Amino acid sequence: MKLTAKFLIGAIVSLTLGAVDARAQAGDPFTDWNVQLLYGTNYSEPDIGREISKGLVTFENAAGWTWGSSYGFVEVLRSYSAADENATEVYGEWYPSASLRALSRHAPGEGFVRDVSLTFAVNAGTKSTGPQALALLPGVTAELSIPGFRLATLGVYAYVDRSKFEGEEFGAHGTSFQITPSWSVPFKLGRAALVFDGFADYIGEHGELEYQVLAQPQLKIDVSPLWGSEGQLLLGVEWQLWRNKYGVRGLDESVPQVLVLWNP
Image 1 (tube, one colour):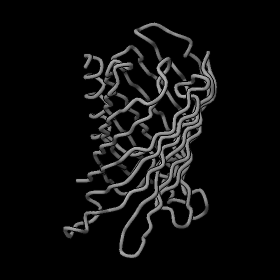
Image 2 (cartoon, helix red, strand yellow):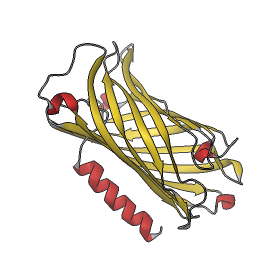
Image 3 (cartoon, one colour):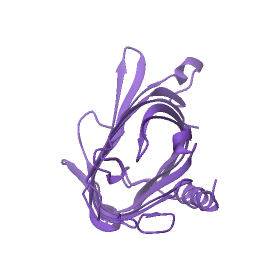
């Protein structure tokens, strides 16, 4: 792994595990983190095509303080394909937010929109084959109240892309927008506790890149009641759907991934 990848892991992990959540309401201080293991086949990469297998480890953190919240994750990916040079990737996102209601000392609303927060996000990553992702996303995140949803948010951000390839600009630089709904819906089937959650990103075209649509819905079942616990170990599947991956026209992806989530 390159030095830049190691630095990125340390920097974003320290931010996400020591800071706070962009997709949780402001209020009493809290922090929550988990580790996810995923594996899938049929990933796509530019100039390679599909049928690339990858394993992922994701560290995810959500936390909140009285003034706002933050959400972040870091994932480490390994390709199992000679065509992709058995590449290693490190990628992270951090979404710190300041609640307008908290800053103005108002309680969360009781209507459809509970709160609106100012958000300034950073997306960054590096891959051993050359790509270096970097995007800044200033904008707003709305917390919504929907019956049956534990969490529902809608983010609207500017998307300032400063990504490079081997240190050089390659047509990605530009400013566009990103719209991101996210959700979490817990439910039960008999005595089994399940959760359906995820997000979807729409990123507008910019530079020489096409628009992108990325969705990652997850369906998980809590198996920790088998040893008298709750919410500690979940098993399930994540389906990654990506239209115009990386902004490359026609590079589409549909990848089911087995998922193990540990929540200490």
